[in-house]
Figure 1 (cartoon, one colour):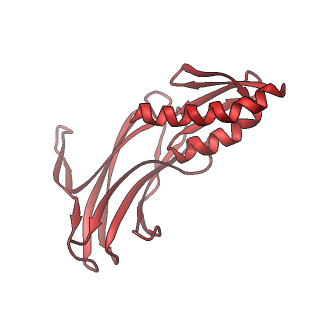
Figure 2 (cartoon, helix red, strand yellow):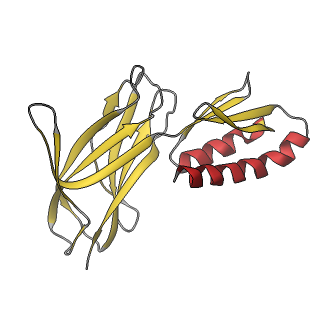
Figure 3 (cartoon, helix red, strand yellow):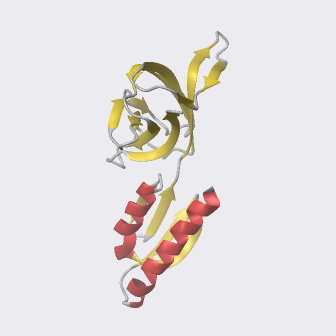
Length: 198
């Protein structure tokens, strides 16, 4: 998955950068995970690259002085389950992954477990779960979770969706959204889905 993500980004950044660098504007170097992936690209492309990276579930940190653009792509896993419990010794126990429900208009209770690795370093990192209907509308939102990732960039949390009415047949999405003091807008960094209907 990471190779496909990187290949798509490289194709776009190379195409976008060819014309503008030739015109003599400031050069920008693109890094992913500390490794340089594009040597020189016009700095006017920074906003276009940021929009693309946000849509692909990542963030962009661009330093205009050095011309360094760092792509930060958190690794997010989402499980939709019937139940989640934590034992006294802190072991997390999952029960019955949910792939779907046969009938609509029945209140459903399910749990969502989210594991995040390689999160952006932030004093105030925020996460929120959002349930999206097959029509693309928000059905329900979880609470806003707050983390400091200055010492550790990995964490996990779980959140129940209680008596949630699923009114349409089709595929529902559970999206994990993230932002921080550096990245002001929520970005969808992970997604899982389940279906309602036969």
